[in-house]
Length: 231
Image 1: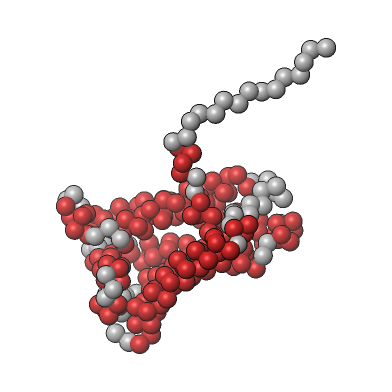
Image 2: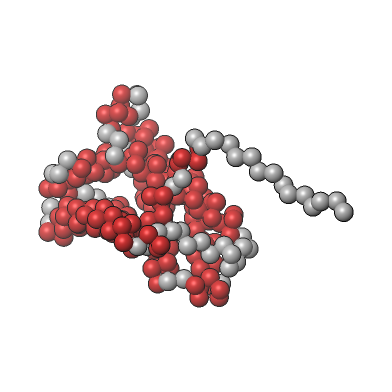
């Protein structure tokens, strides 16, 4: 273990966590008018629906997969008879599938953001930065899939899960020990993933907190079409 690894993967995550939760709370309390997705669909509808749907479907499934892979203890997978190698194979298959879907949609959104004059003119620096950072992080994630095919024993995934577990139980030194000797592509993916949470409170990503889950349980609304009266 060296100082840089300890700083980036043992201390940095806790600093980011404080900024993430405190920043979101302060922004919601003081700047609620900025708490929105700031959709640019009205500026240019061409291809937006397809790109947005592909991106959101892909990114939501990737997030669920990362949560299951990093936060759910490997003893739970073992309880259901899923070995580390099988878990890695599932992660590569499902992650690769939804990663490609997300990549297609995000590529369209990035191109639109950078090269559509109306959309570019209405975009803030943070809008462009966060989109490009997600794009970069997604590319790193897809590269890790290619690297992972070279070792299908599942122990890299176990090390990543152990790193996450030790961080969550406030044992940073033990956590960093699992990442120190890892391939640089995994470490880069972890670092930029953490950095996304650092920028989260200062970007449009805060709208994720406002997912309208209650819509699934609300009563049906009957909408009647208004017809013109016959003269």
